[in-house]
Length: 326
Image 1 (spheres, rainbow, N blue to C red):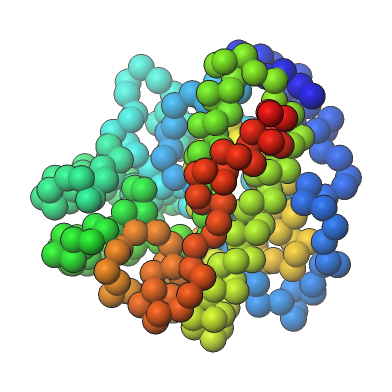
Image 2 (cartoon, one colour; image 1 turned 90 degrees about the vertical axis):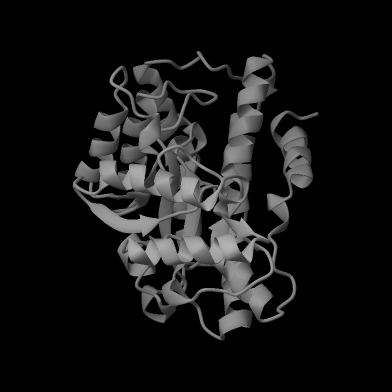
């Protein structure tokens, strides 16, 4: 078991060595898996995306170290194009955030809109929310590798307020923006929050167990969404995985990619994901919040729509048992 703290690995070359060598056992992080399926016969395709860039300090890394490690991890994982959904309102003249975002684009990844200040639609007036989109768009639109995609913060599309939902949908169309929906989610932000809390409290964390929990949860979520999509649409759309620009993503995304490949998944560009016909579907649901597959399933009255580890009570229990050994 390894004791970790927010300052343990700051600016250390040893960090990169440990992340990409010492803590990369040959055994799968999610236990026994089936033999890889040939790309020629697999219709399981998935793209990667990251929300909330630039993000504040995490549990283990300085904010300026994390983007460099994340870019390297994506390269190692064979993820040639991920989508980064940006909150430009967090960028100031006193940090390196703009340069970090430019580095994502230079590495081949694409940039899209997540509002300037991370507004929550169900909590603010429609006009305020659209203004937040416009502020982000003004910063983004002339940047290299920009895409006219918008992702709702918190995946909140207005919840039970249909008038607000429809007004923002109309506003996006007027602006030439497509909903940058997701289909696969395992609440990595909550794992990160629990790791931050544990590190600040000086608790011991099992690093390998944290990696395994992260990878296992996302592989399970991808398989769950694939099954849900097939039950709902009678086909397998390209899946879009939701991660956040966190320390955990920078440390474990290459392990996640390897585990997905072993389960027969082919990693594709974000551009390919958003060319799938599912991109043009607008679910008419009573509660507009969550993944696109969940909302399409709700519209069609399909049961078993929620991946269980997005329940924070269960996630907290698993973290305590496996990572903290409580």
